[in-house]
Amino acid sequence: MEQQNKKGERNKTGALGEEIATKYLGKLSFIVIERNYLKKWGEIDIVARGTDGKVHFVEVKTVSYETKDDLNKAISRGTWRPEENVHYSKIKRLTRAIESWIIENGCEDEWEIDVLAIRVVPREKYASVKYLSNVILE
Image (cartoon, rainbow, N blue to C red; front, side):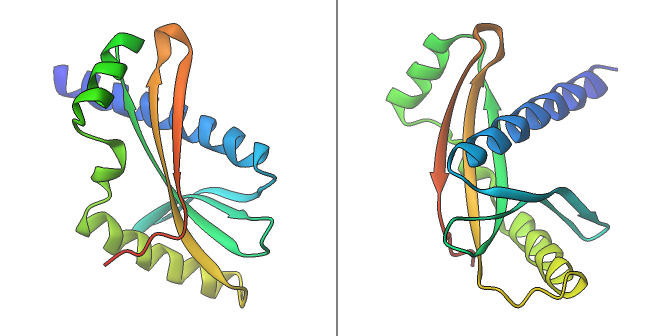
């Protein structure tokens, strides 16, 4: 039962992060084309068109803190960052999903992969966003 609660909390945190990411991209004048493109071999959190005309495949990573003070302590200590969770198996699944999306949509436009690292304090309705543009995934 405790395992299910943790998974439920992670899903809630992830959904909150994707909502924040969508609004953040909108403020940067991106047009969101699709959210949660899902294949059995991978998922793309957000597909958007940027002001540069490129298609941006956006991976959203979110971490939640109890208080803003906890968040600030984590930042000042340089502890775990959300973007560090974009690991090899995630990259592999993301790349396969991107290939599928490009084929299905006949996309011939330039594209790139971006990461939005989001830290949230839900109780205090606070979020910080770090935008990593055109990341190279190896």
